[in-house]
Length: 208
Image (tube, rainbow, N blue to C red; front, top):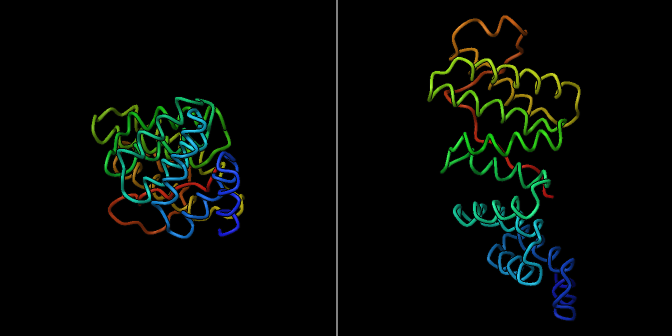
């Protein structure tokens, strides 16, 4: 970090150094300094979608959710093909304090279109349909949720280091099977882990 600070003082306009320095600040919980550096990058490159996404995550880390939402929206607006930004914006809208599942669905759908193998986007897309059913009672949302979660489960099987995601998928399927009409669980055998009263809050994806 000290070497990066020295390099930054010698080359204050070097965006690559600034991005790495801000990343290190976040890792050291020097969050305010990281936010300042990301804002400096955006002064140099106002349409740097990667810096906007990193700033979104930094604001989210310190609980400044409205600022985080703004930066994630800016990142997607600057580059709609940026899969990580679509995912992070969907995740932010999906989670507390917003729980805006209809808006989150738009981002998760874009994420899946951009990267059809993205299990994290696919299963959360399914959950947005499940939560839509809870609020609207539309049985079609149940069927869609089950189909997407089933696809995510099949996609996740056999992948390494994905146990936590698989557990969340299975938990979502149990909730859909429990709360939706009909016997959806009979369609695909479930290997379920014990669950509580609610699907756990999603975890953020690795840095991009």
